[in-house]
Length: 150
Image (cartoon, rainbow, N blue to C red; front, side, top):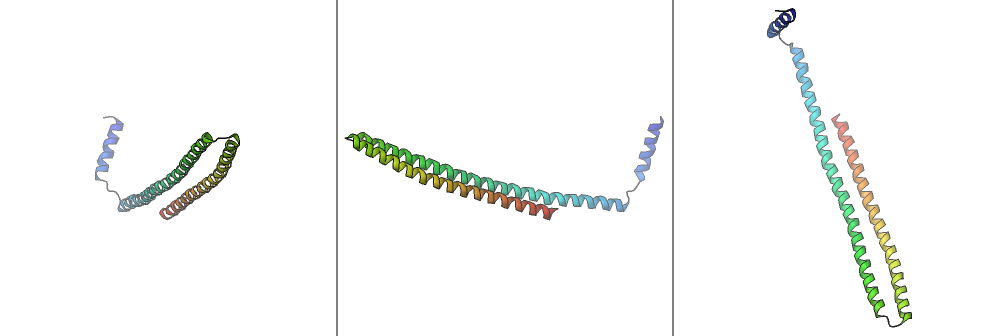
């Protein structure tokens, strides 16, 4: 038997009867317990943050949908107005009547476009503000949870 094999054999023979001191066992058990507690705290924080992120995402999507719905509604209103104007223009009997109808349509559409732009801007601002408030609230909650867990 070579020297290394003999030393290994002696080590395992001696280790077979060796006892781990109670203090070392207590420290090891305490370390595992503390690691588990820390993991549980941060796992809870992570799960809560996923829920918050889902809520923020749903709110942002709802905001984007409301803007999209508004744009679609404006498009429908403007298209319907264009068809009505085209029909009125097609029925015009004289050139002055045609010019009057066309001018009226343009003026009406400019006023409508202004009002629609204002409404869309206000809605976009509201959605952006709500989304940023949700994100800020979520970030604040996350930092508070991390402080508590740490």
